[in-house]
Image (cartoon, rainbow, N blue to C red; front, side):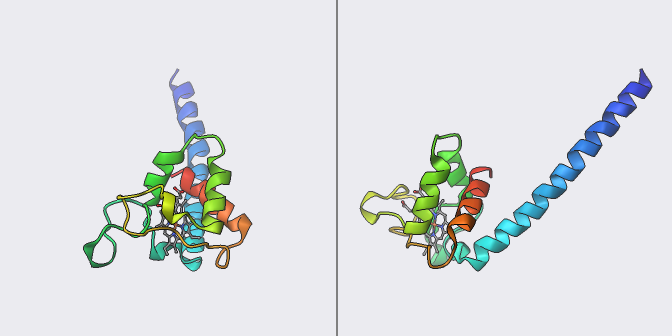
Length: 125
Ligand code: HEC
């Protein structure tokens, strides 16, 4: 009985540890990609951080984006397009919640492949 429990614990550890490490590595890579692509001038990962001069943040915190879109069909493709092409100031998805009127197109700063990688990571936050 005891041996079984020990074995199960060992198995659980060996399964969990490499996954957590892989997550940390991925998080680091994605954060680096986000800052070299200029996203972090307007976005934070988590809410609570004010924007410049204590105003509302310029863009929505990414955990809020995840909450809003997680599990919605086509979210990954839709958001990748918004990131590359920019958002429409006349139909803001975050009206009143952020100080930025719209997101400028980011296609000059990030490739489509990298934008998709970032969006999928954001959706999993
Ligand atoms: C100049 C400021 C700025 C930059 C730079 C910027 N964003 Fe945004 N972002 C915004 C604003 C403002 C919104 C809210 C748009 C709205 O109200 O519809 C937004 C919205 C978003 C959304 C949600 C879109 C939606 O339709 O709900 C995602 C995802 C996003 N940004 C990701 C990114 C990524 C990834 C980058 C970097 C490649 C980036 N942003 C760079 C300002 C910015």
